[in-house]
Image (cartoon, rainbow, N blue to C red):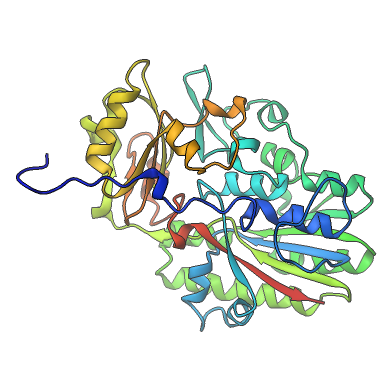
Length: 386
């Protein structure tokens, strides 16, 4: 495979740019805001001035570098980046993982939604944590209370303004519940209702969400007119919300991950690759952040082959190496340990490991995310004061 004097230098998992849990990560946002609102049990780890009324607007797929790269399409958001900062999403940089990190204020190693799909330990099956299939007991899977629940108990008027479709989903239950769920269909309705909620209450915490940018990126890529037009819509919505902020309030615009386009020639098809699939019982995660579950006794061989084939383009780690490198946070709960792959592979270069037969929909997506590169991992933390 490597001939002559071409030196083989695999990437060291310890050198991967691990998320900045505990000081500048998505899981630090709500605990910091809750501490500022006087909710017991939380402390501020981000340098944010407290406000009596706080709104978090999370735009799915709105990476920091994507904002900075499109000043003409997102003039309002760009105007906020001068005073704002990027924070890290978490690993993997994917929606289910990030929403759980936001809502619980915990890193993935504790809340346990450690990937797009992960193994249900002892079952020989994968679980899709966005769609919650198969339907595992939600509170057994993620037992911690949300920051929203704790804020509500502390007397803060707490609400989520999102699609009516998400009102009762298991992901909402374990990550984003507590207080009042306000179903609103359009972006404009969500912005207006979030602003009104702040104005109606003396101490308030409201979360609102938009999915269209992520959908456009997956379908058309982030280098497409469709994506850029959606970004301009997001920019207008953020401005609409900001202009309605009542006194003594703060708005924070953030995201769950960024996105990168990966060309067809830079995709390796696991389902057609006898070398990568040898000894593998289940392939979890997604194209740029793979959890690889080996047949009993095969983990060492699987790690050796994945390192040999991919180790110069991806950080290829054993489960224990990934945990030791802090990819999933400072601690990994016992119930979460075996949800993590025997091998974890995170893309550094513009490549993806697709699975054309087992993941036909995901394999067609142009824009991808999941790994720790800046374009995927860095998300905005933009502030507007009312």
